[in-house]
Amino acid sequence: MTTAMPGNKKWLIVLGTVIMQMGLGTIYTWSLFNAQLVSKFGWELSSVSITFSITSFALAFATLFAGKLQDRFGLRRLTAAAGIMLGLGLILSSQASSLPMFYLLAGVVVGYADGTAYITSLSNLIKWFPKNKGLISGVSVGAYGTGSLIFKYINGSLIESQGVSGAFLYWGMIVMIMIVIGSMLVREAPAPAEAQAVSGVAAAAGTAIPAKDYTVKEMLRTKEAYLLFVIFFTACMSGLYLIGIVKDIGVTLAGLDVAAAANAVAMIAIFNTAGRLILGALSDRMSRLKLLSITLAVTAAAMFTLSYATLNYGLFFTCVAAIAFCFGGNITVFPAIVSDFFGLKNHSKNYGVVYQGFGIGALSGSFIAALLGGFKPTFIIIGLLCILACLIAVSLKAPGQGQPSEKGMSLKPSRHTA
Image (cartoon, rainbow, N blue to C red; front, side, top):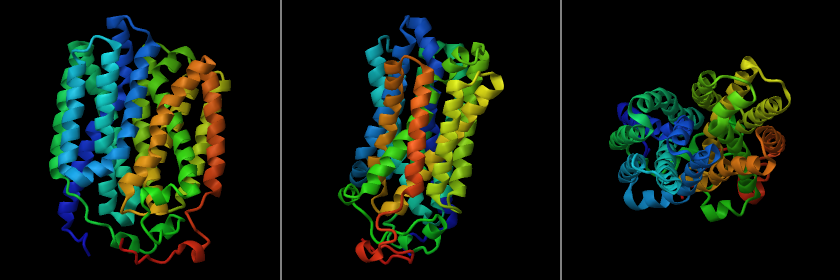
């Protein structure tokens, strides 16, 4: 067994990944900075909030190349370099005084560094624990959500004591240290040839074990790759659009004061993290696609409620909690689904392609809102897309499932060693 390794060493890898992911997840506190930047520089709120969309798009774009960079430089060096790059992007943002500079530094630089470390460390950890892909994915991306929760208070305190520009400086230094330390603890997983030979894992998830590890080109020849992209795009757009404007919709639609609406940022972080941990573990025990269809249906219901209901404090936070919980779960379950469909060997590259739905989804919500002129019509469109994605998830099967003679797919352990 090439993955044989002392348990304590494997858990050091988990610890290192968790530390890195917590630092990477701090970008989800961006909405705390919107109003402060508007107040300091006099910009339009809509213009400032685009920064987070750019960050998310750059994050997703980086995942296309992260796997190749890992092959060239190795996981430790790549993630350490990404941590330094992310930290410098935030530190230099403390000196920025124009929107284009924020778009470049806090948007492009920070997002690209974040995506590079995120996808490689996540895929690496999944390869170390092939029997518990859903659970271990939940631990990793759950740490990402926990970072946003903890830094909601850290960055809030920094903004209050150091001002918005000073907060960027200290935020960057802390995150740089966290990611570099985490990178020192991780160890690259060996080729997961035997990981595909674990019987019962995919069967428990209701998915056939791939008879081979698909390359990116092979994956893109399947219709399932594009259907997964549509589902992931929809799931990401619903969560990311809400994260970017949750404080504003609390004030505008629910009539909350600014302090009460700000609590929604912490609410999202808590339920986002809970969804990642709970649904990640659950996905190892039931069909991941059925679980996905349930979360999409719940998200659709919450979106329609935000659109049509008269919102009060309780109803607003219930909808926010539901969307955040489902979004966190979907982000967790998808890496495991991609490995179920296309194998583990090229996981970071294959998931990087599907992950473009994250970046496009991040931008699409803002563009739809600008086109339709408000929150409510945007929620309606997202709700309808969630229903469509739910129907796709219900009917979707892994490539060749039910057609073993054509694709060599089987619920039996694979002997493919790539």
